[in-house]
Each structure stands twice: as C-alpha cells, then as structure tokens.
Image 1 (tube, rainbow, N blue to C red):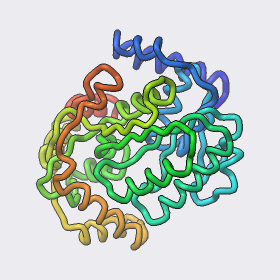
Image 2 (cartoon, rainbow, N blue to C red; image 1 turned 30 degrees about the horizontal axis):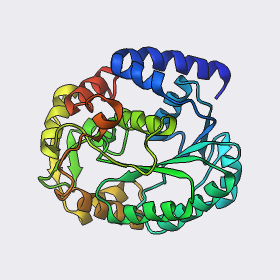
Image 3 (cartoon, rainbow, N blue to C red; image 1 turned 45 degrees about the horizontal axis):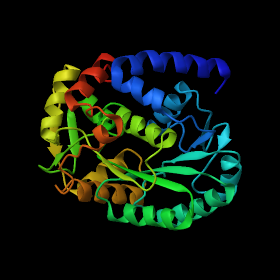
Image 4 (cartoon, helix red, strand yellow; image 1 turned 135 degrees about the horizontal axis):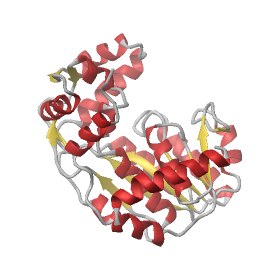
Length: 308
C-alpha cells in the first residue's frame, strides 16, 4: 500500500466508520494502544482487507500478506512465513480455506513456532463457531506459540456471503440453494468481526480470550432469503438441499470433488441448529450492539451488491 493510498484509506474509513459509530467508536479509537507493524494474513480476503483498512485508519503499520501480493504469504509454503513476520509485533491469522480442513492443525502448530521464534507479541486467530476440528487447530496454535498472546475469534456465518461471497450468484439468480434445512443462524456482519479483531490487536485485556461473535438475531435461511429479496428488489427463494446434492452444485461451479464434498459436509454440520443461539460478545468488546441482518441487507443494496 502506498502512502497516498494509506492516507486516503485513513480519511475515508475515519469519516465513514468512526463518525457513524459516534461516541462508542471514538472511545475505541482513543483507548487503542498503537502497536508496531501488524501482519494481516489473507490480506486481500473478505476479512483481511477490512482489518487492514481499519489498522491503516488508526495509523498502525500494516503488512498485508497474500499469495500474489507484495508481501508473499502462502499457507501451503512455510518457507516464506519468517520473512513475512520479521519485524512485526502482532498478526491477524485467517487460515485458508478453513481451520476444520485436514492439515490445518499442523499448519497452526508450524505458524506458532515461527511466530514465537520471530518475537511476535500478539496473535488474533479467526476460527469457526461450533467447529470441533477448528478447536483442535486453535489448540495446536496455542500450544506452539509459547509466550505469544493469543486471542481467538470464533465467527458465526458471515452475512457478506450473500453479497460478496459464494452465495452472491444464488441471490442474483433468485434461488438460494443451501444445505441448512430449517435451522436458524445468527448471521454476523464482517464489519463487526473486523472491528473486534482490530480491538484485540491494538488494545490490552484480550490475551487468552475466546470470543464467539454473532449477530443480534437468528434467522432461518428462508427468512434470510425473504429479507434479501426485499432489499434487493427481486424475489429470492430458499431451496434446501442435502449435503451431497450441494456438493454436486459446487462441482458444477468448478470446485474440485474433494473440496466440494468437504464444504458441503461442513455447512451441513454447522447449520444443524447447534449454533443458533446468539451471544453478546460483539457488545462486550466494542461497547455497542452487533449489526442487525436487516441493516446489513439495506446497506448492501444501497452499495449496489445486487445490481447484477
């Protein structure tokens, strides 16, 4: 990121985000302990990009790591991790594709060792809510990073999956095909997630914490489809399918068979009802309520998410 780009990001984010948050946002900004350089893994992804923007707005030096970016970082190539971490004080860790995949725990253990050896002070790890295998990966990182402060942020299903993620085409096509049955999910706005991550990276009192982040209300996918349709100005119908049937849908979009099977099974497992309860962890960290799903849909529509 160039200096001009960073300055512009800072102006834009401060105006659009801290002004909207009012006193709560100002308190978070003024109380933040400015840290040294922060490595943001998956720095061009949905969460990494938002975290990097917020850190830059606070004047925190950011090193955005990605497979093809200026700071090489690839979860499949450990050889570049030490260079990416060199001289950093903290890191936001977003493992691709998911902490529940085979091999994730080994990668977390390896990253923890490299992080400890580099002198890293703090790590904030993105994890999945209600994912037993993700919890194994969390423990692997915790056991390997020694004295490094670790905060785990377990997220509910992203609301932005409907506006800029895998389900965008489904919303545009009017049929939300997904293996969620009738279970309710407290969809989380990624902007809330990014704010919590930045608070944990830049403020004190989060070491060892495990935050489970949700929106303030649980909706079934059928209810979500109705709200999406109203905001988008087009009918959107939820079509429940089995895990294997959804895997076939994914393969039709070019996803490999093994990855499609894993994702379909993961979604079916996560959306079986055991994650339906909401939490107040967003409010505990930020001092304000999490964003409502209706507010998310209106903002996404206003920003042109479903104009395709």
